[in-house]
Structures are given as structure tokens and as C-alpha cells.
Amino acid sequence: MKKQVAIDGPAGAGKTTVAKAVAKRMQMNYLDTGAMYRAVAYVLLQKGVDLQDRLAIEQEMDSIQMEIVYLQGEQHVFVNHEDVTPYIRTPEVSMGASAVGKVPKVRIKLVELQRETARRYDIVMDGRDIGTYVLPCAKAKFYLTASSDVRAVRRGKDMQKAGEKVDFTELEKEIIARDKADSEREFAPLRCAEDAVYLDTSRMSQDEVIAYVCKKIGEIYG
Ligand code: DC
Image (cartoon, rainbow, N blue to C red; front, side):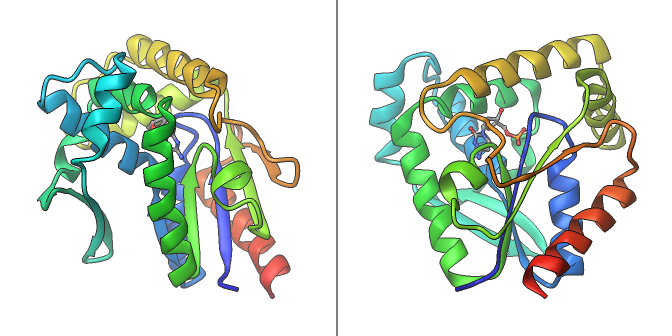
């Protein structure tokens, strides 16, 4: 079986940055599953679909064809042959991703692609339900979290680096709302797997988290 590393946790916990760095260091592939939910939300918002309308979302899913492509080591998400990666990091798309993630048909379709990727490559995958639902047999599972204000500051700084204006109070509110929706949904909610290493990173630097996760993976996979 291929090596599987699952990294879950709430919004802004630093999962993506950590997962990317760990994958590079451990010479594994990396899959950001949040980007996949974001891509669905973006495309449906573009089409004017109401993201609270479950039936409408389900109908649209049949016409969505998604492909994950790595360009110069960076993950890009293509929907119906269009690279939507540059457009999926807005607050509107963040909330939209959480909304489409409630719909089982969306999850089932995306999870199929996630598991298919894990069958082909040694993989570090980050999301909300990787350790509990997508890859329950992964030997290395981590749940990264931090207080909501720390997470808002981290996410906000990333957005500022990308040239965006940030209202930190609004951002923290959005993060709390998203965590609530993600952990209260019925199908594959955000949850720490029983066999995951739980890590509160509020007082840890990114380098410390990366080093810790790599050390644990080394112990597990040798
Ligand atoms: O990790 P992220 O912030 O990019 O994820 C955006 C949203 O997508 C998140 O709020 C909920 C949804 N999501 C999900 O339901 N399951 C995943 N495995 C990853 C993301």
C-alpha cells in the first residue's frame, strides 16, 4: 500500500502550508482537498446557483468535470478544462466551499478523486474528513488546530502577502462560522480521528510544526 498522511483541522490552522512542506521534505505528493470544494463553489457561484439550494447543486454536479494538475510543483484545479485556481481564495468562495461541502453528492464525487489519487501516489492530503472518512486506514494522521484569533491572524497575513486588504475581525467571524458549519454537517463532518495526533499549534512556529509532523511520519513509516 502507498504511504498516506492525513492532515485535518479547522480553517486557518496552517494545514496547507504544513502539508505542502511535509510532502516536499518526505518526497511525497500533496493534495489540498479544500481547493477542490472551493473550485466547485466558485464555478457554481459564477453560474448564479444558490449555494443553499441542495437540489440545484446536485443537478449541477453532473456537469462538473474536475482535474488536479501540478504545474511547477503547485497544485492547480481545473473544472471543465478551465484553471480556476486564481479565483478560489476569496471570502465568498470560502463560505461557498463550506456550503457545497454539506451536500453528500458533492463529497462523494470529490472523495472518489481524492482516493484515486491516494491509490496512485504516496500522499499527504489535507482537509476536514481525511483521517475520518477519505483515508480511514492512513497510518499517519494529524489534527492541527489553534485558537480562532491566532488562525485569523495567520490566514490574514497570507492574504496580505497576496496583496489583499484584510479586516481581521471579519475574517475571524468568517472562520468561526465556517468551523461551526463544517463540524455540524451530517455527512463526514470536521472531527479529530480517534487515532490522530492532536496538535494545538497556537504557540508553535510553522517550522516547529513541520519538524514535529515529519519526525512522527518518519517513526511511523521508517
Ligand atoms: O481548507 P479550506 O479552508 O481551503 O476549505 C474550504 C472549505 O471546504 C471548508 O470550510 C469546508 C470545505 N472542505 C470540506 O468540506 N472537506 C474537506 N476535506 C476540505 C474542505
